[in-house]
Image 1 (cartoon, rainbow, N blue to C red):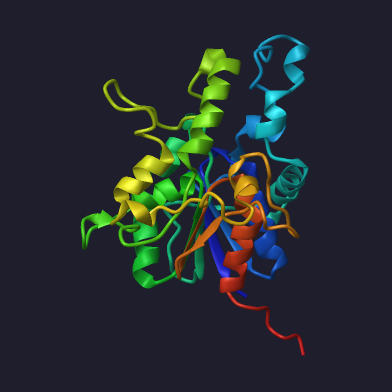
Image 2 (cartoon, rainbow, N blue to C red):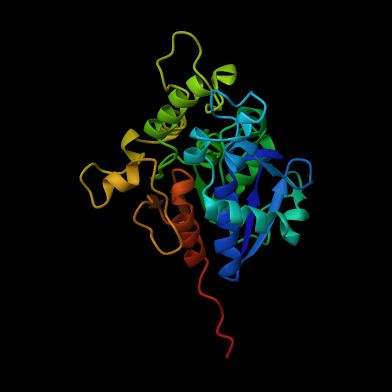
Length: 290
């Protein structure tokens, strides 16, 4: 059995990336320890849980409770069920703080994502978490990152080299194709909060997508080709790149996961079952009860 440390922000993390990872790991016999900034239980992005708030009528009484666009972007039924189970669990209800979190006694560090700026920026920009990620890589601990969790890793600078811990690594992350499509859609339907789907936006004079997850992560790498995405024409590439199909516990075809030894990465909630399963397998099989 391995111990997996999962730091999350106090609010606005993605429910699927955290809860499905928790469920896969715990059902595989591994121990999960959560860490939040405050030391209290975190709360997921409510829009990604309910789907409410992404339609042009969301601000209206009664109609606002009827999601349409949100049905496509929120956690699916399986993800919402996993989230309900997770928030009732003892480990989720009793996290440690980021300041208390360290690599001692930890076999893997899992960095989930989310996109809503109000909660995610404190997570991605945390000096305490940057130090934790650097220490984990330095000790050779298994590190796994998905979506904006990869951006947290990319911003973690090893003081010994002055470079990101991802320099020299192969990785994926939330792609600009996925991020840009969701952003363009929700800036119209959620017109009163046009940048809801972007954690960081471009300053005047910068090209579109300069502050996207893919662009920033790519700038941290040794070679731009070290950023990996689904190859057009490869098996199931349409399913993997559509942004509509999500993997399940029994169907990994929609998923895209990059395995770079003791570092594993994935793009978005639709990869989470496969992503977490790779982590569980790398931590080793369960001990034989006999």
